[in-house]
Length: 193
Length: 133
Figure (cartoon, rainbow over the protein chains, first blue to last red):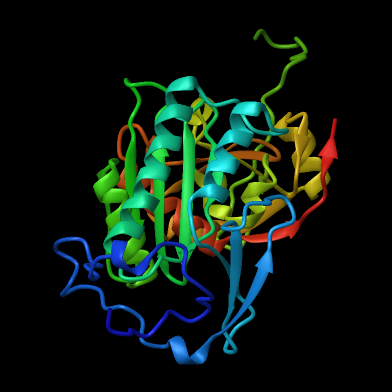
């Protein structure tokens, strides 16, 4: 495989190169509206091991922009998000315990979406760490942010309550259907790859 | 009430708010400190009344008014930043008001999420004290 530039902060392979496919980063309809950031040369990264996660792949990276004091944490795979979702069902102070429906749906969606991103990228995707919380009726809410871009997934507590993806940037905002394809597409859009 | 009788439950005077008055939103979860937009999504008990906020009080007083057993801080935002979004602030008690016009995320998720983002941008976390009552 021809060598390709690695994303800043990329420290190694997590899957064989022959399993990887060429990049198709952007969800349909976004090409003309949003352009990926080209300012990767202006950031520094540090590698930080999570004290609570012991798997070799559970590595967080922190991107520090010299122009601001905003620090965004990045996780390479879904394990940190899944651990947060598992923490909710186990019971967490100040959080409503999610319904079994929301728990199962959120967990499977996150795992599948992160896996989908990984499969379709030429290098493992680096997705910002998610905020994982519940609403007050047992739904699960996940939020990712990179600068002005935000993606939120709202998993309703049951099939009668709405599940959706919300995304916004400086120039647009909308709601999409919550499924693996849309979530993977929006996370790729978020990271600008 | 007949003349000469004493009203033991007189209507409580509630002052009109101005654009520069500060509203206080009590933060019920520690994660709201990390991403404030969650504090401006209507809870299920707020869908008919509006988003609960306080005014003319300290953060500790706002927590007491909120009735929350546990809280993790307070964010403030000026009335003017709320009304600029075509939302209405309706005082219903001397130190309590409701922000009306925010849609339930079940009914209009795009607008509910977008307004939550805008309110979070206008808000400032002024207190990060964990309180239990």
